[in-house]
Length: 145
Image (cartoon, rainbow, N blue to C red; front, side, top):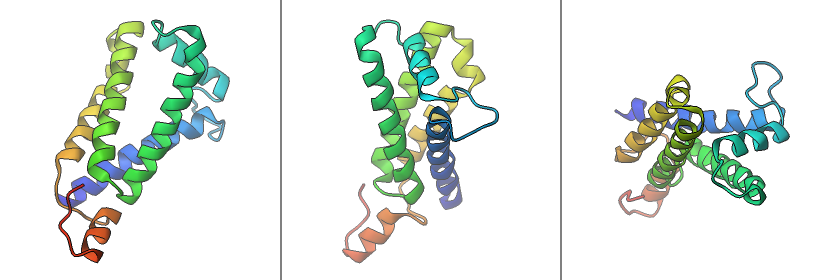
């Protein structure tokens, strides 16, 4: 189970950071957005119920969450918390896609699957190559994050 947890942490964490890299133009091939402006336009497309003035803020909040959650999962810090928050973020994204683009889109991009994987990660108690486990051992207390 420990290798499954490590795989989930790295896959979800690097998935978030890859998406952020795409919207900042770091990826040069096979891009989804390619730049910040396209990402903001996509954010507007999948959140048509938000007032236009809130779209840039929503794009920023999503990006900050993806950076923080991604890094937290990769290093294994507050793993259970960040896994559950990642599941919620991905579920919101999947539902936004489904309501605005149709139900096929989030299934084609496996967003519901990623959300379920994040929730599953949050349910795994044991630690493996995680900062959480190291900090718990160092403070002589059980892992409870």
